[in-house]
Image (cartoon, rainbow over all chains, first blue to last red; front, side, top):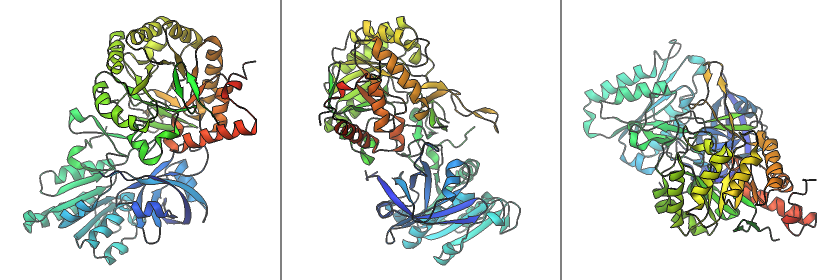
Length: 276
Length: 302
């Protein structure tokens, strides 16, 4: 991994908008972060200058626009930090540390012939920059998106517009197929097997809740589709100092990996997803 | 202005040090901040053999504080000496190695190993880690054990020796005096306070290791009281730490009797903290016409 500088940007809040349910998104002006960020990297945000909350909060990038000098983040309100962010005012300044984590680099996109992006819930948002880069490289891209119900589905049209195939599953059947994202994946694996895609390099990236990632990993384990997972963990610093945000390696001799600097993207085979 | 201080033979040009466990071995920090913003850097608690650390969850925010239970994850002394110290030494900032052990003989072994490492300026003997089963804090909660642990290092280590104390004791000055008797050149305090948090939905402790060490602004009054007390009880310099986020926080510690301060949790939030704090101390001194930090050190004792 190349050693890129990490910026502590004094970012300008351009807009904050409510998407659906308790999910919000914000566009932030942070040119230095936008021009260096890769898909699946994240930023660590001081949501306000106070000891409440004390630590920064980590967010994946759901949009990277180097030409505009902006980044976008999408979040669900889950606690004090994420609640404070819904009250950000246009033009106020917030400190944004980033870009952080490994992300997906050019090499990833160069080797892929076909890409399957697997999203659960708000895990859909950070796959946007991945899909965009993949289409830029003209990679055949399919997005499988699972959510609880229609009212929690984020807008998928921007992905369709850039030529991604999008398949949706909802647990209550209110949109797309009734079931889980893993049901969509089963169909995709069958297609892949029937088409004898053995010679094509099929890669997949999954982002969503831990149980979903574990299920996807086991589904893809005996296929020739390589899986990468993007992990979440409670973080203190977000830039590799504290060793707090760890995930267990599948190799006992390797102990733990830091999600913030060794990840957040890992080849699924390297990490133990059977948490608890 | 000249902000240099002498910490029992360890001379640093700025009174702000990176606290152990919040700086790793410097590589990650150097991508976001500048290592020479510090007067000295204390690297991650290092043990004789590599340690994988504790199971997650390892960090959890509480009111104005942070609970952690990392469990001394580190690559072991050999790897630190071969891979980390040579890299870190390129910055010319004094390197302090925090060492942790399960036994007195292991402390001696670590001291012997680092004695052959000219790039290391000082050892900080960790008798205060709350997150490991054996050793750790046990050495820092009785004067006798603290004396023996310090002595075990002193025997093989002739350069500056710092002992890092825990606040989880009835009488911290007694422990401090034991360290002085065993030959410590300076003391650093405080390490974290033992604490815990419970997830009421899951109905169980939040941290994988159940208890952890509490740090951050919420512990500052406790740390300040410990520094105020210990610095009056012993004749050697004290490095104060515990929730320092600003220059004014640092000045409080100096006025309580600290010769220098270390910052930990603040680094996790703000890579620029050492720069801001050093500049703030400097401008305070200028505006109050203070020539040397020694003139305000312990000024709050009376």
